Length: 175
Image (cartoon, rainbow, N blue to C red; front, side, top):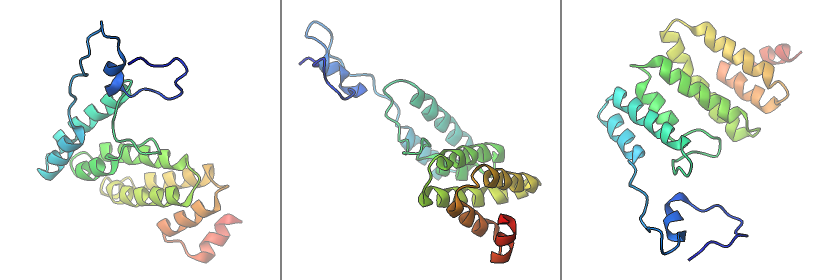
């Protein structure tokens, strides 16, 4: 079975061995760890160091060509939220970094669903920053987002809800 030269779609990495000629060895690629299962086990057993170890390995594995890692349409891992929540107490700076990456990834999209996800991540970041006595960072982050995305009125409305601003405060801020 050979691949036509005008084939418009990419070939999945785990099927490449089927397309090799008969004189080449038709061996499947070596098995890879199931990082999702390992992360779930470490989370269930409350081992944050192992959660981060497997998460880092999964992210590194995603960098290789032909990776089949569960990445969402926004470019963030489907496990970012799980990992950040699991390590928030033991590794707060790492959890904040993961949440920041998620916020950045979702802000690239201009739709209400992405804005609501951004607000959810911001709400999760606030108590962590408060516990580290860095609440000014949260205010600064919100201010930066408001400044950079000021042309997205629905995002501003959602951020107002995140900050618990009143309608009057919102109208004054927009003037």
